[in-house]
Image (cartoon, rainbow, N blue to C red):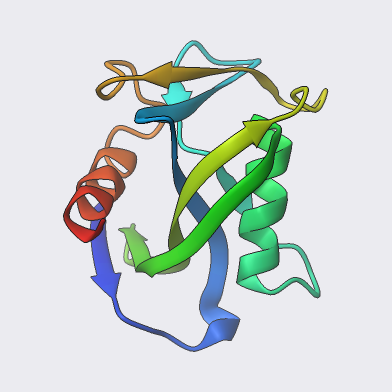
Length: 135
């Protein structure tokens, strides 16, 4: 599996939004109800959505963030079994949370550093590193 970064690709290729989020100097990670690992908020783009709308929706669904600044960082891709899929990487500074929506995320946790147990250990640490050099 390989992760690549791009300045831009055709919008129709963007299938995912991943948001690296911070709140008062701490990294925001999600714990899915069915896993004992941590991940960045994010998910699939739904039909008719812009990639920015996807990022805003996923950030709210997975963290309960109600007030935040969100900015695009870059396009990323994951190459697996010869197939390349594309997503947009965002950075969010979360000012306020509401109650976590009752969906697939069990809880959010705030970290000073990075979690030891990643849901996607071959992908998300590379996205975090990209964010840390971009902000």
